Length: 343
Image (cartoon, rainbow, N blue to C red):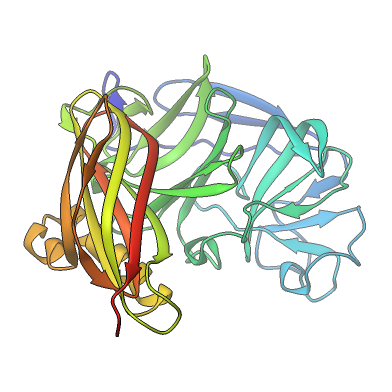
């Protein structure tokens, strides 16, 4: 993220939201005087103090509720259980999606919202409610902890939705949903950079952070620090069913300014190798390089340009390929060859 001029206050504050049912949201950042207005979709009504309900994150939906998952609904089956938002300037977590496809139909002004069971999107008329993601949302986006500040913003330039989930204390995991590939990318920031609100300004995602700075999601570094990125390809079975295989060769093509290190993570099952890969990434992020490397059975480095073939001869039933870099890069292709280990 790139920081702008610091504010006088120690952290961002948001004035009281005036949100009449079917009306217009007006959100005001206290120090900077920024104002944003968004019309709320017509088939929805929001009450900041709903009668008979203690949670402001219950949204009355006038569309067809019979087809909705029961876990999304309140007891009376008329109120969607949308995540309450304690600090980002809105009683619920939602954002407008200017253009997208719903059930293969080009749609404008759809609404994405974070419910108790993940991220969903619905058309402006209240039709075509559907989950976002080929396999639904990550578990971390289910049942958000009370007191968290949730901000969402659609980035047309990146064709995706940012979901910032900042806990009351400490740092949280934030997400970018790639609408083109239907995949979620986790993101992490230092505690002082945790977003409290988000908006789109001049096609750029802007966030207000805990330390009182307003930052944009842009640039090759994070306030002068390198931005680390990770990608895991797999799980891949390299041996016959029920037996070990040998990874005889691997060739990668990457577009990068510097280099992209790769590691082969092994496991006895697809679940185990995915767990090992996730653990390795977390150790890398926390500075535990030695612990992360302990999960690797082979590795090397790819540079931009001509593909290079390596011969790791790693043995395992299942593997993942972990890619990591701290400079801009993009994935090209990976080709692997394997054979049975004979036992």
